[in-house]
Image (tube, rainbow, N blue to C red; front, side, top):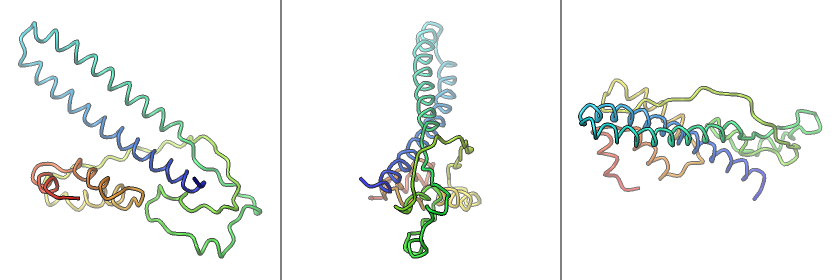
Length: 182
């Protein structure tokens, strides 16, 4: 596996983990809301048993989210030596591919550039894509967010894009996409 392949693999792996953390956090919040509604319907005896099970599940979920966030914090990014000796030749720069998705910046790093790894200390805000639920006024915003975060990512397969899209759709759009064959 070449250095470029390793970087692309690490970037794709990081994106999958980041997406999983976001979705898990969203589902965890939904679960807590549903648990509260269920608890309102239970008798006292059932309530006590369910509270214990819910607390155990919440602890496991919080631990999973914590571990995933720690894994993302420990993710190593490539460091390119900025000295003139490490500069990319003009012909080399012209032959490299352009990727519109920002996370693929490291896809075609020059083999002449010496690389070492440093720990990333930059913390970017979590991007949240609002789910689309047939409100035509919100479609443009959803389309822009989804396109820039997922659809333009060339490292995701068509199936991954479809699964991700399905996760952000509600009601009629979700039923429409569920009926599609990928």
